[in-house]
Image (cartoon, rainbow, N blue to C red; front, side, top):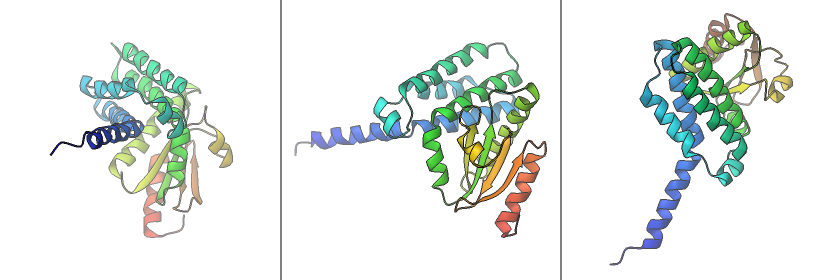
Length: 224
């Protein structure tokens, strides 16, 4: 029996489309792993960075960027350039400096796919955690944003299936910040499965502990 070449070609094409459609999510996972390794172990391995770099430089087709991710080629090209700049800047700097530089790139990634992440986040029926950071502010605020971003990503890594998460660079995408009157960064908001805002924590050094305590209460069905 002759092989059905049309069917084989179709499977290859569908496989390629699936790979493209997963690129943004995979980039996010790789980037978050790099942040956590830098934050907790002071390590950025060549292998981890090269995997992320390959994903980014592979790119995403124009039609997929526009139709699925609601982004643009120019926005994604800017993200590529930023990653290559980080690759040059990280040479010879301390792990903490590399972490600061890379969190800037990670927030750039979030704003590149903001219009894709937002409906994904609010369509979830899980308890939701929305974190507002910023890439433009004073040194103290930037440091607090960095520390609390690490706390949020650590929580996400430990409870990957339990909650839905969204990270927003509110300097560029401030629509939700205005809507929920969270006028300071860093801020964290908790929503229930029906998108009702349960609580808001703004510019608080103890954000991580307060957030953890509130999530425990939510799981127990207690009022917060």
